[in-house]
Image (cartoon, rainbow, N blue to C red; front, side, top):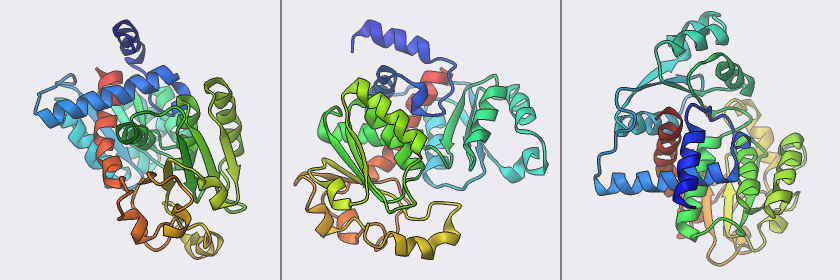
Length: 319
């Protein structure tokens, strides 16, 4: 990527929302990944970098989290700014104030907002009413911050993105939606295996295949985990019952019984495959201990990259 293109991309990103990777071009996504790698290098080298000095991020949490809260809060501190934790109980939105009124009020105080919530429409409504950038920290439809960190980790371990195959085994949830969009935009091939009734959103799959036609990637959704994982460079899974679906745990355990990523299934991937999981994980359910704690696992590199990828997003859109 030329220096001129980097400068043009840096200008184009200022003031933008970060809701889903659909809103970003392949070049913009790759710019953010490269920026995350550079910010990670600077942090490891002890270089001070404060592009957000004097700026404040409001962090709205309707869903609890370990990685999202700590990585955003520490990230703002490392960028020279400050983060405010705002739970639903801290805001009038928890007592009936509209999302629009909340967004317009907080925009008068803050330089940016991050929200981790249930309904995707809440993030959309917040962004429409806000006059400062809004970052999607997670919704039931999408998890773009995690996926940006994930593809950063893949690039670090594999040295490239385009042409690699990623296999996702499990629930067709928000993680697989964002992984599919990222794969199609960045030129990775992706196969998804889910039980009947737990497929990824049909509109997301359709849209992803349109992106794939432009990038040259291949998108495949099937039932058979062995078919999906065959010759995969990257193997990914997530919990069978995401936050908000805990009441379905027993039902899902039956439906996903044949979808555990274990040593037997992993033998169908490439010998040098890497295993990924967004965490938290349930060892013995969606993944065996031998895989998640084995030599192929890079789960903590993923977790660390949440810090650096989100710093890249904040620096790019709030700087």
